[in-house]
Image (cartoon, rainbow, N blue to C red; front, side, top):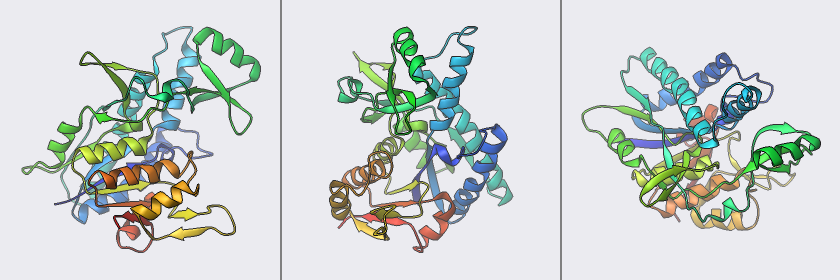
Length: 315
C-alpha cells in the first residue's frame, strides 16, 4: 500500500484578486483535485489536510457585520465551521474527479481537534493575524469592547492577532488511521483543516481555545500519529530556495534533514513563509517519517516523478 498525507494551502482556493465566491473556490479546487485523482490512479491512498486562512477570515467578517442581529461565534467554532465548508468542497470535487476515472472511493471530512498546551508561550504573545483590517482609530474601540489584541501589519494596517500554539496531539488520529489503513475498503480522509480546532485538556475534558495552529505543523503531527511515511506540503512555489527573492537565490532539489536544519538556523526560511514548512518536515522525519516533498499543486505529478519539487529526507 502506498500512502501519502498531503497538505493543501487555504490560499489555493482564494487567491489575490479573487472575490472568494463559492463558484471560484470550486473551480480552484477542481484543478487541484485533478492532480490528486491522478495520484490515486497511481496507487496512492491519501489523507488530505488544508489551510483555511481566507475562509475563516470571511467567517469572522460576517461575524462583525451581523453582530447586531445574531451572536458572534468564538474563533474555535469558526475554525470548525471552515473545516466543514472546505471539506465539503474537497470531498465533492475529488469524488467527481474519481468518477470520471471510473474509480469508486468513499471520501469523508472529519472535524479535527488538536490538543495544545494551556501554558504554551504563544498565549502570552499572540502573533497570528486574522480577520479584516481596521483603521488606527477603530482599533481602540475594538480592543476595549472585545478584549482583542490588535497589531500593525507590515503593510501598515491594523489587524487582530491571536495565539499560534504548537500542536501536541490529534484527538481524532485513531479513526483517521483506521480509515486510511482499512483492508476491506478504500477511503480518502480529509482532516486537520486549518491546522485543526485548538483545544486544551482540563481534567481529561476538552475545551476549545482562541488560537490558530499552523496547518503544516498540525499535518506533521497527524502524519506521525497515523504512522505515515510520506508527507507532501503544497504551497505557492515549485521548490524550496536558499536566498529566496534575491539575485543569489538557489533552488533545492534534494536536501537532508541535517542540511535543512542548518539552512533553517541560518535564516534562509522566514517564519512567515517557508520556515514552518521546513520545521514541520524536520519534525515529521524525526518522528519516523521517511521523506517530505514540497512543491505546488500544479506540479505535484512532475515532482512525484522526480522532475521538480524539493525532497527532504534522512541523511
